[in-house]
Amino acid sequence: MKVTEIMKDLFSLAYKEDFPGTCDTCKAGDPETDVTKAAVTMFATPEVIRQAAEWGAQLLITHEPTYHTVPEDMSSDDIVDKKKKSLLEQTGMALFRFHDHPHYTSPDLIAAGELEKMKFEGTLEYTDIFDCVRIHLDSPMTPVEVAAAIEQRLGIRHVRICGVRDLPCQVVSGMFGAPGNIVLEELQRPESQIVLVGETCEWLIGEYARDAAQLGLRKALLIMGHVGSERDGMEYIARLLRERHPRLDVKYFECGEVYTYTD
Image 1 (tube, rainbow, N blue to C red):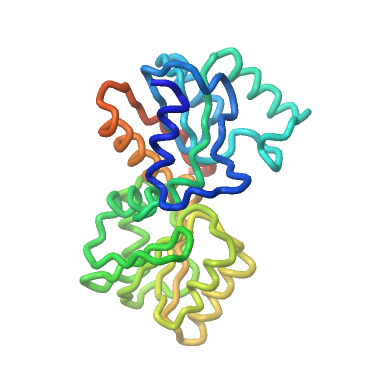
Image 2 (cartoon, helix red, strand yellow):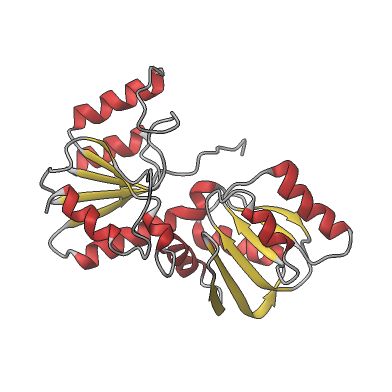
């Protein structure tokens, strides 16, 4: 299969077809390249690029930006972008971003992968809010219990907690990645209790959760880190691609969390 055929098939999973200015484009290499090995990752770091090339991939599919300009397709004189571009050119791989389309599937493919790994028992509520899925837990859990379960099951080093810690809650809203101020809107809903997010505005949304808790409201914001909140979605997509194209060799490459710690 060619790169364009693989990506067209993945794009067909989205219920939204019109993406003006979509970031889901080929960022490196030839989109007409024949592919027998497809690598999938969350962030195409230099280490991931090297590992995928060593494995023999002709295509690397990434969820988040590879370059650091805005928009990403702009020419950049930044030394990091230039070195990364040179590295990709040396590998000969095609690199394709897959970000917009997986967030407009039903269910959201990223959320589906995260929730499958979390294994919380309850009823799922799919919303029409971008990247928002709610879990109505069968048995209430405290924010500390939810955070501990996420750390263990998703391999996240630290989940930060803003707001209440020890009050049992029944509604968990998953808003993965960096959805922006819609996280605040979700947290402000009277029915909302625990909101999961990858990264967010600490001075606004984190402090809202803290204020809410100190005023007696059952509100908590759990910050998972961007990579930790979406990488299992990309691993899910790798498995989906493997199932849809059994003759294609597909491998997920872990980029790791962006943070390191003192211990």
